[in-house]
Amino acid sequence: YKLNDYRTFILLIIGIFVAYIANLFRMFIIIIVGYIYGSEALEIAHSYLGWLIFSFLIFIFWHFLIQNIGINENHLNK
Image (cartoon, rainbow, N blue to C red; front, side, top):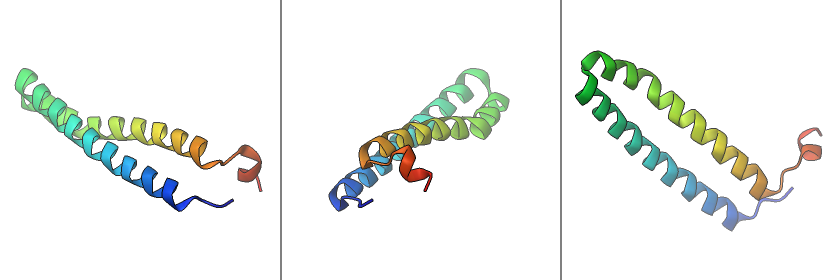
């Protein structure tokens, strides 16, 4: 299959922007957890929250990406 260069570029920009916003959200939540629940909860949130947020967003982004660049199951099985 051929990728449309403009579409690929737009999806790249969207991915970078979403990753940046997700990181700001992660830092905000970690700060709030640390302020409300203390340093032990902050360390736990710092250890696990990033993985949870970015795993979820990568799943959503890849789902959106596959739908928009025209990959279908027949192509993946070749």
